[in-house]
Length: 465
Image 1 (cartoon, rainbow, N blue to C red):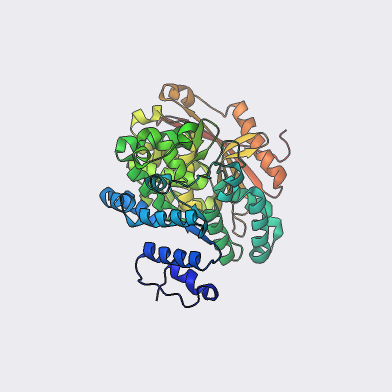
Image 2: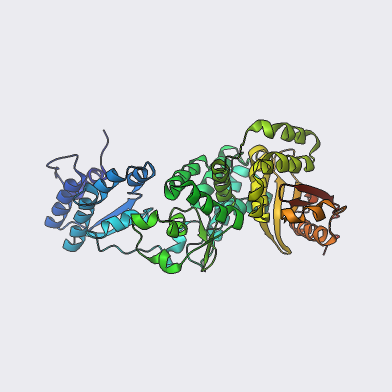
């Protein structure tokens, strides 16, 4: 028989509640009222109430476009508001010490404030910011523990650390805060790592995160709104926001207002703060989720028949050039000419990564704009430890040109010297940290949907810098 949290509290504290019995069951508000009255009358210790994601069911109503039902459970004399009024009364009377709520969107909080007006929002308090994820120090300790227990080789730390930083790091909840790892998806990785006895999971993205796209569909309402927002994120890589908006009260009307999309996405955990003025996607996990939705909205086919033959051939000869040619023809080739005027290198590297990750995630890990001493490498593919691809590392530098420059790109007969030195510098940075890696470097020139030219650049270890 299922028990409510109020019943569980009573049963686990029978030494305090004695033979107390509820006059009725099934009404959480009344049951809490009875318990608090008993505690107050018998001078029991004060009650601490912890509530996590209490708005989960109301969020489902919003994403399912059931706004009238949402209103009925969050306004007026609804059970949700009356329940919090009982908590408020308990705090006033002294039977409740405090109520701590986590994982709640400000939309639901705003709908309660007229009655439950004693709540304080701690989200932007620097002291509490790092409660929202794992710091680098915590994640590092966590990783070392998991490697010792399940990986049997502590020499793998640096490789695995680079992997989880690229995929799960990057959340900042205040402009100057230290970056945090998303605790849900980092734990997803470690759980799979343990189950695979030290293996890297084929899927770096927890499929449950895809359900977050329901929020974006509901949030943007119109196709035009959705495309504008996604263009800003996957092409420009950022959204502009206002700090006063971030800290202001945030009701349902604001939540679905296009002017406040950056704030809504921040509260949904789908973007993070880049600085005091702009938001960005935090890591590869977020890039993957958004690129999938971008493709869906723009009706870009992911039919495996377009890609699988080339990737199957890659398993035999390990040549990257055919994969780039396939991407240019079968992926970029689906876009109308006018779209290429908006594209840039950020879109190229992110979309190519998304295609690669569909078919090579079982043998390679990826990094987009990987931070290195000499700069930010556009795309890095690294063979997964424990597979036949281990120590195979490819570094790709993309250069994107508008349609008007197609003729000059077509005329190129060799890689430009500066571009060659740039990509070799990135390879040297990686090789210094991982001397066993066999490095291969590439420069790719793409001019809109008209021209694609690429060269593999000869790299000699330690010959750069």
